[in-house]
Amino acid sequence: MNKLYLTYIALILALILTSIPIKASNTPPTLASEGAILMDGDTGQILYQKNPHTAFAPASITKLMTALLTLENLAPNEEIILSRNAVLSIERGSSHIGLREGEIITVENALHGLLLNSANEVANGLAETISGSVEAFAVTMNDRAAQLGATDTTFLNPHGLYEEEQVTSAYDMALITKELLSHDYFLEVMSHPTWQIPPTNLVDEIRYLHQSHKLLNPYKDTSLFREDTIAGKSGYTVLSGYTLVTVSRRDERTLIAVSLRTDANHLYSDTNALLDYGFDAFHSETLTPNDFITELPMVDQQVVTGKAIVTLAQAITLQLPTSIDKKSLDLLPTLPSSVNNRATIGDSTGSLSLNYEGQVLATRPLIISDLQLETTITALAQSEDPTTTEAIATTEPTKNFSFLWVVLLLIILGLSLLLIYYYKANKVSYKTYKEQQDAQRGHTH
Image 1 (cartoon, one colour):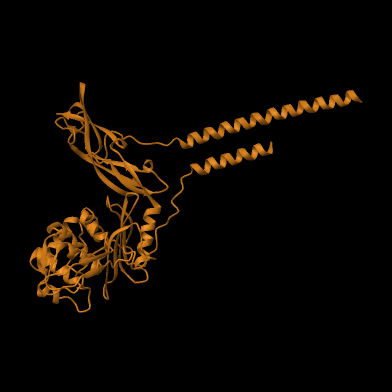
Image 2 (cartoon, one colour):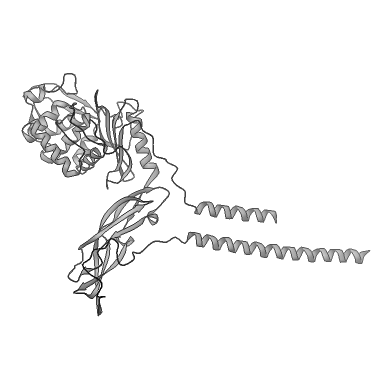
């Protein structure tokens, strides 16, 4: 009886513990970097941020914007010619690969020099080739940054050597990097930890390049190399401090980590902490159009002529804490009270906010996915204005509800009744057995 009782208690405890939601054990990291962000490289969702819109000097991560404009304006097999200004205007002792005035190299080799060795004269040469001058290229950089939504950024040069008013933010650098990831050739360049520039019109020797971002280079520091890192750029000047942008990909998840104004001791440890947190504390969940379905009346001059079926425009993938799934999200639509009877399938008709614990994780468009005409036409109430836009849909959206606790309680109740029945049955049997034994002893005596 004692064993059965203990087994019963253990079973109940196990059921309760496994059904209680547990928050992810991974906690956000504490960073030395003054500005930092962790962004999903596919959707732009922010998983971690520290002073994300504070302006800092970018140093050589500026070259990521230079690389983006190069990829958008030049082909890898095109050539650039280094001008006197491109070669001689950079600071003495700053990063370079020894190009000379009048030297000709391909864009392919220029991009490797720019992104692996952080060559400042290469940045100047690309800027002059694209825009005619470094100053004109800076205007192009700022225009492109604004198009991407990078509103905290001001570029004055293509290489990142310190200028007081050249600033960016962790959020802006993540946006620029996310756009770069749409260019397969960028990832091709970043996949080479080493590169060789063959002899040119002015130099007979091969130039050997080595990736300066230690998480990307297995030959530079094996203790820091990360196999899941696929792209990035490091930067440093005395006045800007250390800066780092890193892209890692694991199990079809892509994360962008940005660290601004940190020190040499925390440059890579901060980034590793961000990436580990992102991969360990979050998982991907995909919402399909069928995960949100609602209806809106179709009207024609105050008369209901049918209904429009409204769903997500397309599937959306979110990074959610490992302890929850998409059923835990609050789906909050913003919709009109009705749609015009001339609406067609595919028309945009509002948006859906995906929230968790009060935080907006994403907002995505809603569309009409189907139309159903009424066989019986119904007049709208005179007080209703079908053209009025409401904050929330007039039709309650479908919601997911978990019956886990109901099932759990039923199991506990059933086990309790079974235990009581078993206990009483055994008690009666034992009492009958005792009476028989006593009667037998009395008969014997």
